[in-house]
Amino acid sequence: MAAPTYWTARALREQGSRFYRALGEALEAADATNRRRLYAGWTDEFWDFYGRGLRLAELEEGGASRATE
Image (cartoon, rainbow, N blue to C red; front, side):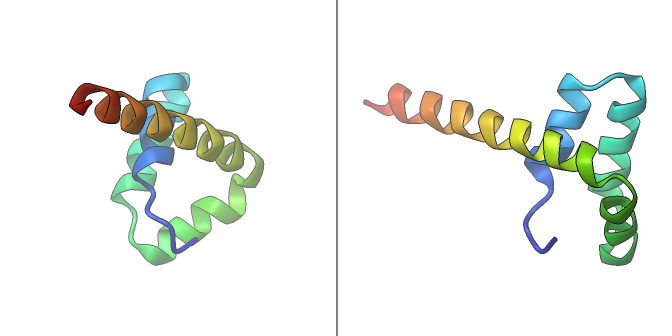
């Protein structure tokens, strides 16, 4: 829960339904206490989008490294 939420929130916004896009916005805007509440209430969904966020990060980082070669 101490990990940055950028990629998870981005995956929610880019790959989710309207509901999950709103949840991504809420996650990105939440303070630590409210972020814990979101994670506690939506565990499975956040794990799914966390994995998607990791894949987005890998794609972006891979694309950036290929561009500099």
